[in-house]
Length: 201
Image 1 (cartoon, one colour):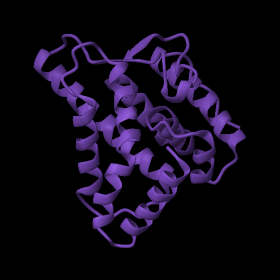
Image 2: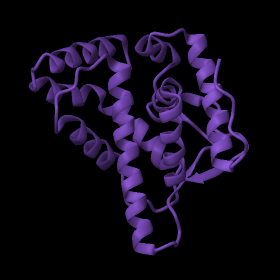
Image 3: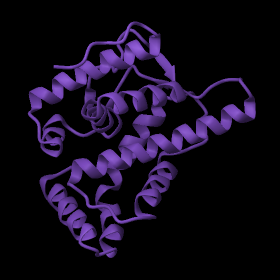
């Protein structure tokens, strides 16, 4: 996203927070390609033949963000974090629905071998995990370590750069990197039923 686009996103989010609902309509064209790239990244890691398409996922997530109580947006990273969370919820709901229909058949799976913007794999020793299990593990991480959970949501699920995460959470980039490393280890252990990892520094 260009510098001008980033500035425009910030301006529109501020207008939206200030009670100008038309700003939400103006925002979508500006951030559409970023959200679609995140949606493609999600869907590229899942099983072949997924019935959801990136465009539908983006529009459904955006509807969830714009339909309901007003949000005081804390900036671009905050918005993309919640957008990524909305996409994750849609995919998990879809996976649960399919699981109900199949009653224990093939589960929707999410490959963890690649992540947005060329980041290292989330779990290097785990080639894939089912989406429902990953969602449950991430929810536990957020409950136990909220900041580290937000780093995962922004970085892995939202495609937000470490610098922006640091600004949004008001921490250093070095802390973001430490949180990311801790979260990868914690999630890996949770998903493989190993001993829980220690509290982060």
